[in-house]
Length: 97
Image (cartoon, rainbow, N blue to C red):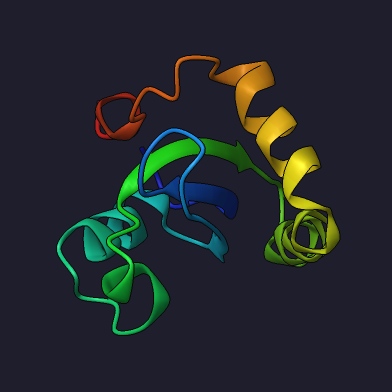
């Protein structure tokens, strides 16, 4: 996967702790989370499974979308994940191909 702005959602497990983030390099950023290279929330709560992502044309669009998703209730975030990934499969293999 080439560098491209993206919004992503990580989860600790199905219906577990979730984290919403934004990046310009999805593969690199998810690798960092998975390998506890990012000190903070995802490291502390072991939130490593990529369960949702969206690619965007510009970083400003991605940041706007991240803020929108972060403002949603937990229920809406879960609906977003389950609409695209009902089994909460880790999407890591999809982005590294």
